[in-house]
Length: 355
Ligand SMILES: [Ca+2]
Ligand SMILES: [Ca+2]
Ligand SMILES: [Ca+2]
Image (tube, rainbow, N blue to C red; front, side, top):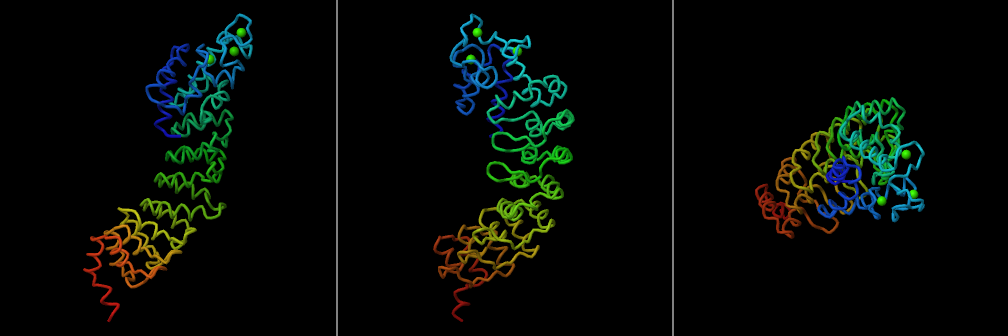
């Protein structure tokens, strides 16, 4: 569900002012971009201008035959719903709706209301107009859609709601509007992740704060704790702070017994997060299920800056993991010279040990 791919896809639709060219253009562009993801939507097997997906999902015609019912009227000129408008023109209106929603054209989105339910059928992600507007932070369109009765908790094919999409893109004002309209704050996608998780994963601190205020994660076992570990690992200190303020225990552990401090000590560039966690009362010498402390993990992965912070904070250098190794021995085994030098500066723990 990459934004870039999605944009290319939207561009394809946008490039189809000449409705009849929709599918022909897409076939050519598909070759250029090599985007097979959208092939089912853009393919036009019988080259009659109607996309396969439109024929199958909406018009009920045979996508492999230009005149499915052999009555002499091509599928493109048939009128599947008897409203006086030919199928090809209806397809153009659906494309126009998608373009209007994505660009935040509220007036046109409302004018094309009769296609709201068609849009998810031809969008490979099953996006409703509300989801697409929310994802793009088009707050006026979101409001108009909600007022017109759009289902605030409708999902795409990944079971992601408009709230999840607004949260992962960090459109906090849109998140507010959706919450106000009764969006399920703890609804989860196909991976069991909710809006809180997605906002946190993408570093949107304001959105995380809003969702926590709305009670996100309070009913989902371990959700806030999982989020703490993840954002600590990613170095999103602001979100760590918001989560701790919301009552998450700084020393909570994941399924491998790792604390947030340990999670933050493994990747590079997390010194500030490590310092923040220590100031917030993180257990400096907490060990995970393998007996490894934050110091040992940082030593193993050559995170010299973090080793320095942990040593300065008084981390226990003599402590051994379940394999009987101290942090400096781990660093030696891994050949992490920068870290070894730091231990030497801090006083050789081996000497201390034999005293
Ligand atoms: Ca066709
Ligand atoms: Ca026909
Ligand atoms: Ca029609």
